[in-house]
Length: 134
Image (cartoon, rainbow, N blue to C red; front, side, top):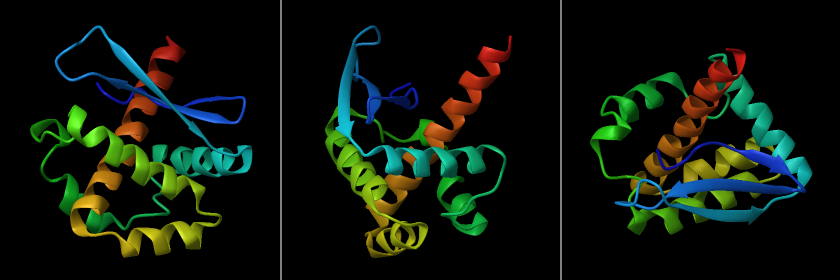
């Protein structure tokens, strides 16, 4: 499970990435993100966790995710830098409209990487919140 979620603290977003082929080793990459951008992305993720997808339309989500992310090699070590760069640039956009505009400028491969990463974080956040309740 390469992305384990978001850790909010000291104005930084940490995305934990498991190194491919080394299941017990974590490579922690820290992205410097402002608190206002963190608050916004956390709000968007929280909305997605309850089924309200403000960034992506349902038809696009269904089209991209009809092939489960687990069945492709998205989170391989070779892709992690690109995923990190895309996600960082995405988060740094000021408004929801800016984020949507950014998404519209991406090539298909980058768009799918970002959408899959976003929903991977949503899924892991749901899983983690479920574990926290027990």
